[in-house]
Length: 401
Image (cartoon, rainbow, N blue to C red; front, side, top):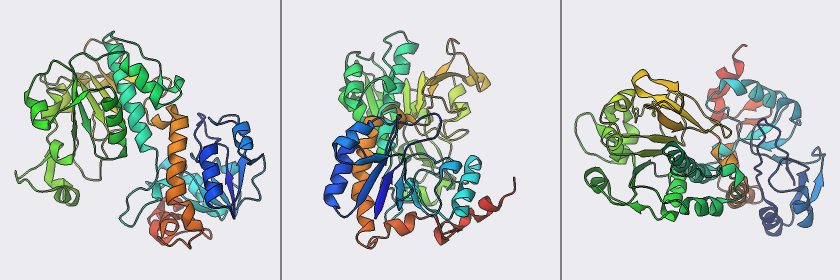
C-alpha cells in the first residue's frame, strides 16, 4: 500500500500538512510495510529537505500512490482518477461552492474520505484542527482587545512559530480587570482555555462571575445549560437539550451584561437557539467590547458575526443599533474577530497534532481490516456513487447549474 502526502494547491495557500516529517517517520516505524512518498511543495511549513533527511522520497509524481493525503480541497484539475483521497471536502453540508468538486470526484471514480467524517461509533470526531482554532482564536481575541484600547499591539499569530511563542507574547502584557466568557466544552473551547490558563487568568464559577467584581482579569467557561434555558422553566439535563433544542431559549444575556470579551468556542447544533441575539447586543446593559467568534457561523447563533474575516484583516466593527458593519474607529463599534481558518495561522503545531491523531485513529484501519469501521463510516464515495451513509447528498450532486 503506497501513501502520498500531497501538495496543498488551494488559494489562499495553506501551509499545513497531514504529517510532519517526525510524525511521518513514526508512521513508517509503526507500519514498516507501508510505502510513503511526499509531493514536493514550496508552500508547506516543513521543507522538502526535512522529509528527505528523514529518509522519504520527495517527488512531483503521485500517480503510483494508492492513497493520497491532503488537508484542503484538491482543485478539480489536479484530482487523479481511481485513487483514494483524504481531505476536507466541505461538501457534507451541501456547500454550493464545492458541488462541482463532489461531482468530479464521482466522475473520476475516486474514493473520498473526508477528515470531518472520520468518527467513532458514537459519531464523535476523531481528528481535526479544533484545538488549534481555539488557541489562535483566543490569542486573536485578546490581541484585538489590546489594540482597541491602545493597551498593546501584539504580533499577528501567523508571524510567530508556535503556541509557545503566542503564550510568551501574551504574558508580556497583563490585561486590565476584564471579564471573559468562553462558550463550549470541546476541542475548540479547550484550546482557548489553554491560552487563558497559560496567561494565569483566574477561572471562576458561573455564579461568582455573574455576581462578583474582581481586581484581576477572570474568565468563566460555560456549557449549553449555562447559556440556554427551557421555555417552561424546567431544569433538565444536557441530553434533553440535545434532543429537544426547540424547547429552549438563550440565557446568554446575563453574560453579555457583565462580560468584556466573548470567546465563542461552542458547537451550534441544528435547531438550537440563537446564543447572542441582535436584541442582546442592542441592550444598553450589554457590556461586550470584543467578540472572538471561533465557531464563525455566518448569520448564525452570534448575531454580530456578519461575515468571516481573514488572516490578513482579522477584525471588523459591528454597530449593534443598526446591525451592520462599521469602521473599527466608530465609537460604538463592537470589534468582531471571525477568521474561519484560524489553524492556518499555527501551521507547525497544527500539523504535528493532526498527524498524531491521524496515525492513532486512521492508519491502523488500513492494516487491521478496518476492525472499528473507521474507514467505512468516513467513506463518502465509492465506485462512482455516494455510499449509503452519504446518499442524502444525491440531490445536491444532481442539482443543475
